[in-house]
Each structure stands twice: as structure tokens, then as C-alpha cells.
Image (tube, rainbow, N blue to C red; front, side, top):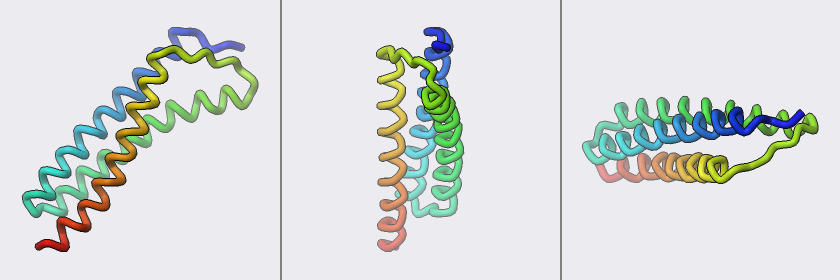
Length: 106
């Protein structure tokens, strides 16, 4: 069974939505780190992680379908969505490291 273009677009937009929400929360965490509010930053990073988990659920459903032998036709919006997710995940990893460095300077 092949995924429909509409289904794939919905999944792509879920990836973009949740990774975009995470990206916003990560930038808010950076602002809190700069203000030495590390508890607030930790809360924002945890919320960002929750959003990334939602993105992963959407992504995992595609991978499971592919593993079952379903044909997945990738459109440019899915490439964009995957790029959005991966750059946000990297940003979160950097933020977690930066949080430690910010706290050391206090």
C-alpha cells in the first residue's frame, strides 16, 4: 500500500510544526540562560524536547510503514521537514552544552 500524497504532506507539516515549536522554545531557553535563569532555561529545553518527541512520532510512523514494505514517495516538503527537524535537534544539543557553559560563568 502506498502512502497518499496528502497523508505524507500532513506528516511533513506535523514535523515542521513540532520542530518549529521546539526551535522557538530553544531560543527562549537561550534568552533565559543569558539572564542566568537556568531553571527557566531547563523548563524551556524540556518543553522543546516534548515537541521533538512529537515530531519523532510522526517520523517513526513513516519508517514503520516503509519497513512493512509500503512505498513512500518523498516530495520536497518532506525533505524540508526532515531538514527542519534535524537542524532543530542539533540546536537543542548545542543549547544543552551552552547551558553548562553559561552556568559556569556565574
